[in-house]
Image 1: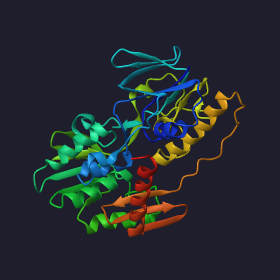
Image 2: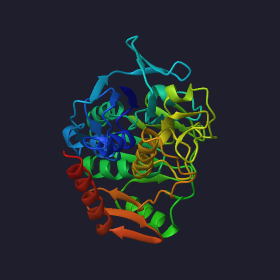
Image 3: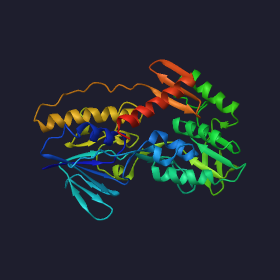
Length: 356
């Protein structure tokens, strides 16, 4: 039997499993999935779990059930490309014929002293649960500082505002306006929503240090009960340790067919892959679809396409609490209730089609 090993059940890994099982996996191939958790997690909704407005079990999707799918619940400590094995933290070595690396990302602290030790995050389910506990245990009238006003920071700040109206929420952003990568009309709408809802937005900030009970903006002390870090991501350490070509963000450089230039049996999907778009769940799923196409051609000994179609992204949807939102569909900016309703619909469809 050929061994296809999938590392991580994020959006990319999950989509590959869903496309191959039950009908599209050749009889001579078996799949081993390695993940720490017994379900796929809806990472795009971690902000709601952290804020206490979504239940943990609402963010879970079960894995496909199939006799040709073996699942190992373990942490990966190293990938040995030369030996074609994956080393697990329990000392076990898992051999592979083909490997799909979909291990996602972790927070990037940009060398800020104390940031790793004294902040909470929402990059993993484990980290999000800790953040939920910390945020919901904060004393009434306490102060929460969120560092980074990209999509994660904005959604977390707005959700927390509705969940804990008693808290003082400070949102620190490096740019002149939050969500500066979006059209100005959208950024202005979101920034004004925060002003109207009593969230303090601190633009042009520069966090120079974090310690227990405080952070420093331009070296000026700001007392705070908790700091949530949403100011950048990097591939997980296992991927950072791989001796392969990477881009400036540390993501793995791939061929147009999504495998390593040096090894056509090793694919990288999702946040660890160097792609022309910013990492997202949509992008990981689009890439996963293309990887399945390539795998099938490899299994059938068919020639591989030199180029693949550009991955089409439908747009971005973000929430501002439960009633408002924002979005970008092609050139069209959406503001208010419509994008919020759309986002809820997209989430429902995803869970429904994933059999949850």
